[in-house]
Amino acid sequence: MAIKKARCPKCDRYRKLTKHHYFPRRFFGNGTRNNDTIELCRECHDELEELIPFEDVMPKSFYINVVEEFLAT
Image (cartoon, rainbow, N blue to C red; front, side, top):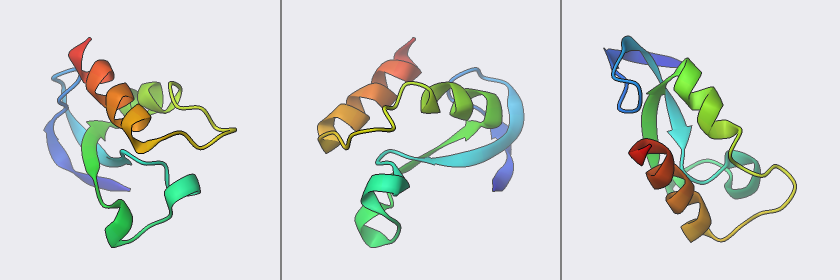
């Protein structure tokens, strides 16, 4: 779902941004227990999603590190 137009924190392009949940909803669900999000453009969101394993749930620290490393590069 598109949120708003703004600069993407990853690529710095002015685009519609979407929410990326730090902790995948497929493992952690929705709601107040999983409301840590970052807003990215669709291209960067898809690129970040490719770094997240689909098969196994990982510790929350893993997902935080993935997002932080993704933004740093």
